[in-house]
Length: 52
Image (cartoon, rainbow, N blue to C red; front, side, top):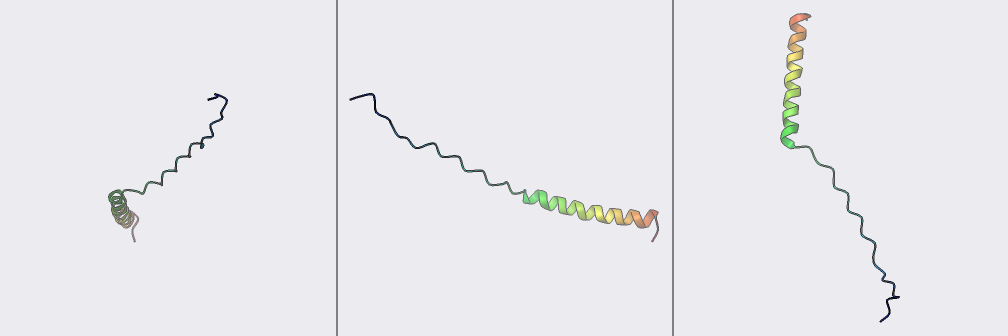
């Protein structure tokens, strides 16, 4: 056999991009609860110090 043979090989396939990570549902609930609590605290502080 001759060493003059060209081997045709497939180029390596590009890796599939990773899907975007979804936020943790527990963290999302925690942030929602914190936002609601902050809203009520800010509302209370407004009426307490500024007056309604």
